[in-house]
Image (tube, rainbow, N blue to C red):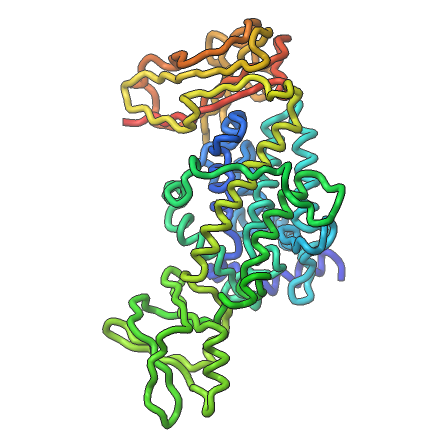
Length: 510
């Protein structure tokens, strides 16, 4: 089958699922939230806050930040996120590059087909694709750190996919209305952190898993699973995937769960379930006190596989169930239980393990990338914290905007350095950049920046006050970020690999 023919056949098969609006295959918004949250962990180099992006602009195609890359890695595979155009529709043929069964090793464990149709014409598993993107990000970094971190965002997306059991079980999940079914983990986490408002989802995720209580994974101590000679990136992917491999997905057994969490579901129109009873001809109704699960947000009632097996093997077998609600009942035959699902009660403990693990693994990825792209001393060079390391600052008019600056020179104290300052201001469909050298000047290329201080002796600084704006009364109500970098190579030219940076997202409003 040619590439064009395969694309046409797959599109004809899958388009009803997309057009129906019922399919919820992937949630790019949750990827961007996780990528953002990982940047807030204490061990992550402060520079990541410069390039992670404003979460308020991450839920769409913006190719200028880590969050933007995390979103676009799905948008290029899912036409619903970016419109039905040939580029993204062709991405349907490479959905399989977001899956990896870790037992297959670095070059195996691929998802190549769905129902006999190709979904991986690139012939890559998620780790292989991530390695290609990671190496590209490293090569971009010396001259274009914005593009580098955007590309790294695509890597974070693939690493986060390894926190979804379906992705490591090679269990495709296009949507409820398709033959592949949906995925309970992705739907459940989306209901908690994406719907109805992903901005509220950021707050909810930080409440459930406060960044101050999370830590980056120690990637230097991770197992390679016996696949010797692989780089640290492989160990991060292998570690995350093996954690997810323990748990059931909708259509595949986890190594530990072994199918115990799964059941068969029916759609229900009510969520106020009060009792469940069993029906079979010639016998009175019997209460079913256990063996079922509910999923209120997804409007599903689920009979566990163990319960269904018991009901079908009874002599005579049971016919169905009656669901009692507060003021109504509904009867379903066992034949109507046709979709596999995992209920909220069984999904929640998976969420509480895998989402913090994903955040810790992405934070370790940030550490790894920063260390592999910088030529600073063995002690990491100086450290800089704006606003005491708190990334977000709310300013009420007409207050001034003051930032606190803390610098730990460490082994670099006493050396010559230079300072660069720039601001990222959201604009419609893009980001405007302004560097400061006595006045704010627009620029498009970091190499065009001029230093605020072309040469100074680096020293420890505590609680210095940097006033950015005296009076915000005339400023528009908006959010923008201000970034400050110490470049340890004072040559009048910004050198990313010899710099340490920090940034603060500032929101101005009444």
